[in-house]
Image 1 (tube, rainbow, N blue to C red):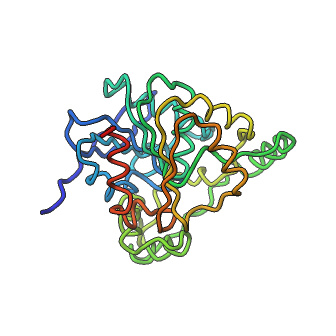
Image 2 (image 1 turned 90 degrees about the vertical axis):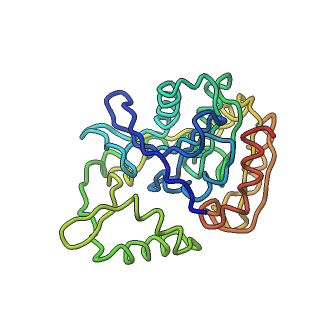
Length: 284
């Protein structure tokens, strides 16, 4: 049986066009999916159809995928992902909903669930438990790096074929499979003279002007009241064990699911996590 083609939608969020792919029945358990850095909603194209009983709305975050880029002079702030999530939920009429986040999207989901815990019913975090942090004394240098490197419109690399773009993606994120790279490249690239280039706003690669410190992230984690599942692939993003343990201890209701696979295990091998993720999001 061929999987149903996801519904394509566009939301107006404060004048910014945000693209989304919708999976599952409209009456299903509402779930908002947030992808990782420089990815897109394509990150969930293999997992979302397996989450039976869920209405998964996977968005392209600002500057990613088919979503609009921010205007010149406007920076991309990490916390914006949380505000965009609630704006989308409001557009959908969701007073309460689940969050499914991967990597950067998992960090944004932590901020959203900690900021407005009354609105978040369930949380699933795929290889991420909050945003990256920096020490307090690093704040001036972080802003300096941003000022020096902002608005450097680096020339985008052009790949002669989609296969070349896919191969580059596999090199950047091992052990990403060819099939997963194909999903990400299909939505994440655009045709240009001479071949293809990535759609993502080049400014997303600029150093962040501001980062949370560790105590701030833990404060968000402590405020999460929703049952939370952290999926940790054994070949995933490296995280210092002691720091991870301290973050885990902050979340009142959290379980950890360890699986074989890499950072994109939900895209490479969705069947490994689909049953647990579905049961967690639906509560059944």
